[in-house]
Amino acid sequence: MNMWDIKYPGGIMDINRIFEIQNKIVPETMDLLMKRYEILKVVSTFEPIGRRNLSTKLGISERIMRTEIDKLKEMDLIYIQSAGVKLTDAGFKLLSEIHSTFYYINNLSDIELKLMEKLKLKRVSVVSGDAEKDAFTFNDLGKKAGEIVLELIKNDTVLGISGGTTMACVVNQVKRKKGIKNVLVLPARGGLSEELEIQANTLAANLAEKLGSSYKLLHIPDNLDEQELNILKNNKLINDVLEDIQRINLLVFGLGNALNMAVRRKSDKSVFDKIKSDCLTAEAFGYFFDKEGNVKMQTNSVGITLDKFKEIKNSIGVAGGSSKAEAIYAISKFNNNFILVTDEAAAKRILEL
Image 1 (cartoon, rainbow, N blue to C red):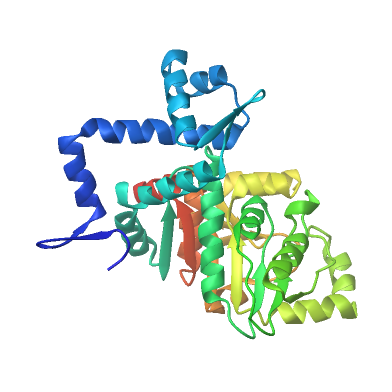
Image 2 (image 1 turned 180 degrees about the vertical axis):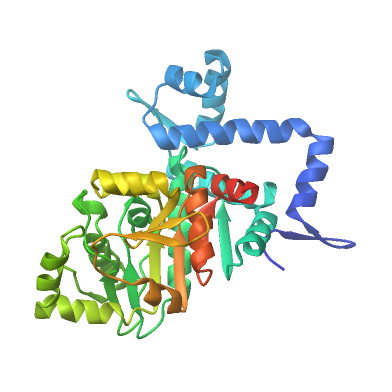
């Protein structure tokens, strides 16, 4: 029995049935829950935020918003400063708990099973909401992925992580863990021409600090020409890291929309032309895929190979938002030997494909 199963005289009643009964008897309760949840969520995203701005964002009159703010303040879920409304620690904790119950309210376990069946993946975890529109959902995505990382990590793990904003969120949300021995964290790829904070090297170092483990960096950028890459690969320090990357047995990676990733890579016109002519939908590890998971293009990049990606026992792919649906679908067509962590918006879009 899990925490959402409640005993009653005839046996066990799940949370979905409880909400169903509640909606029939006191439907206004759910309406009020959703209204206050939305208020707390918007405050969490934009704090400090003024009442008028809050009213505008939620489409609620200032009079009703004033009443709700007073109620939430009485419950010690928010506090008011001259700059605006902010969440208390209790408010943030409750917001997280409410968000978690949406897994059951929205029947996300059923969506997970349908996704596993459609994509033939080993495991799927879906969080509520749309990570492209909601910072709280984006953080929840990282938190869920971080929990799975900690679940799978053990002594003698060689952990690889790719770069990007989603991976940065995973590292930010992962909890510290002690007691694991001989763990090495590595960047799964070379660096892109983007902010230092979201490059694979930085994330590998930050994750290693949280795990109390060692790490190595890959001092080599993506998108060099072939001759330059070959020269750098012959460097002993770089070659040692590349050899260690072949030992990765736990991988955390993001998957991207082909066009967006070409923009991030500052690719030349020929790459964009290829994406358009071949209808490419996904990118991972410097490789571009069509909707059926066929590799159609490779950048001059360095790091984990697709053959290695296929053979890693524990890989966790993390992506949210409906715009990532085609990319997730394509990558799963190429390789279904990974765990997917995604959100409700992407999941529903994938099921429509």
